[in-house]
Image 1 (cartoon, rainbow, N blue to C red):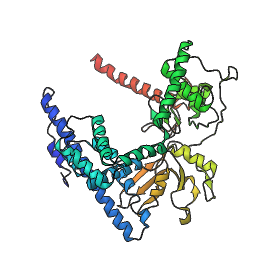
Image 2 (cartoon, rainbow, N blue to C red):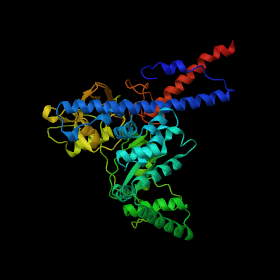
Image 3 (cartoon, one colour):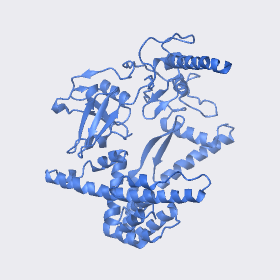
Length: 473
């Protein structure tokens, strides 16, 4: 399999017949085994790359605490993953190749998949290299120890073995875990999101119990909202201090003037979340805050007007491409207005495959190398990616494109391009971007949505006209 990328094409036969269920199942199992074997090979390659990069960096005299910088990000780009995921993959690879040979062998033979190998590595992370190797030998996944086992059984076995080897360290790890408490936000479908808190178990149980008691009391008092809705609404109200939620927090909703004033259907963009429907955006601006609970709107203490303060900032884009108009500055650091501009343009970290929030505003060409403090030489990056690009062998340069484009080159010479995401109102590929708009009977001639509907209507009419002689014949 190594070094022969055509093997996969040659090993796949013709599509199995619909009725040949046994052959379909056999091939599904064979492909799953192959996926595991490929994951094991990727682990070995990741470790080999890490060793090569460390030798190169040591040879040029890089400080010891900086040796190995950028390797996880390089792996991530090659695997089309985020830099954070690349660092985790490198850590997994090191553990498997250097400390857990039995788990690696099980992965190579298809007895474990990559996720379950990750579970074994994760649950033994607190052990020394020698103790982890001993646990790996005790469990010996390559002997079929976990055949038919689910995730929970594997986790339980690894935890028990780790505790037998070093109970003190496992206990200290549990105590240290409280320092890693945090809150995160993830996108969910239909303009929803997952707000997740990693808490010590006592605190988490207490929060859930308080919300449950509040929901039960409200339901007993006749509130028509469901128990889940009541708990969610109470969480928002108690966190923000305002019934309904939004108070004193700026939400930079980006939308076209047509969507805002003319009821157009062009989607808007909510930084930190992504694309949202036009109707939902207008509802938010009307003061509902996106609230969808079945119960009555909460009393804010300010009468019946629940609308919050609204400021409008005009963002000008180039026709067709949707590129934001330039905004220059002679400052060494990006001033507040330009940082706001870059945030609106880039939305998230501009490193390919990285969706992390923007934390740093970076000069693509370094300021000390003559790079200007302007929008064309600026990019929003997360903290980790900004540090990675300073590692030896990495370079980033602006490149031409319909929208702001940068090219990242790794120490191996591979290049990856990143284009700023399209802003609301950017024409869809294939639609006209020049020329006068068609007349509109339902709204202004600048209504792009009506324009596209008019074109489709004319195309259908022309098609029906051409079909008439054929029917008559």
